[in-house]
Length: 285
Image (cartoon, rainbow, N blue to C red; front, side):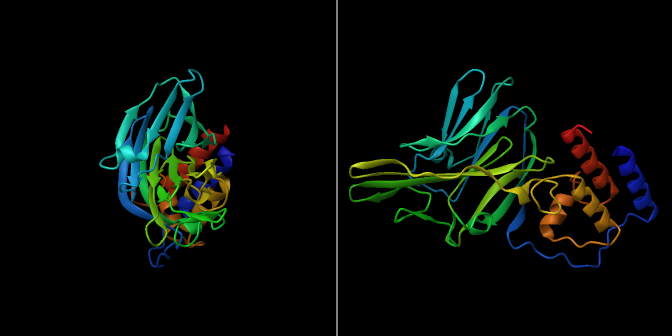
């Protein structure tokens, strides 16, 4: 495979390897990459919030050490005024759990050893991420009640829900704005997944407990390097990037973001090389 990759790159460079700058870039209607970005270190977690204000919610997440069994619990309302970066043990992997006062659920394997690096902020409409879970205004309805990712006090108790996004070591707790949009951070390392978590709970009258949720669903279109916006990063993405550079494909704004693999602000054959190298390392070619 590496030999075939080299042949393709030589042919592309011989053809000029230039990006056609004349075509206008169509904006991706689902996801907007914002200019805001952060840099983190390995073996750390960073906690951010979006539009949460003083929700009163006990929603957050728990990390369970797979070796030590030690539990780390983080409630988003404690990080409203400023983000927080926390150093974690360097020899541990973690399961991720959603957490509310009434219930917990869900697990995702998290390895922080290579989680450091650049993260960019994404703006997205929740109903575009999953129209089966979120309405156009960003709320979720089940069992006759509408959840809006805050604590909603009623006469004899409360309803509560939590939404957060996890990419590498960065967690963003979010409450959708009035139009159903959220903003959160995603990794710019090739094939690092982006996931979202929800949980719904209640304590009303004689009824309390969890109401289910989504535990670690991957947002495939935001996995960096997924140029063709399908369900994985593979050689098809590198082939499409080669087609773009030879003038045989057009990219929208999200694809342009994915195509700048080395994050230097330009799209050229160096990005093809970087993408192919990352894919080869991931799949062990």
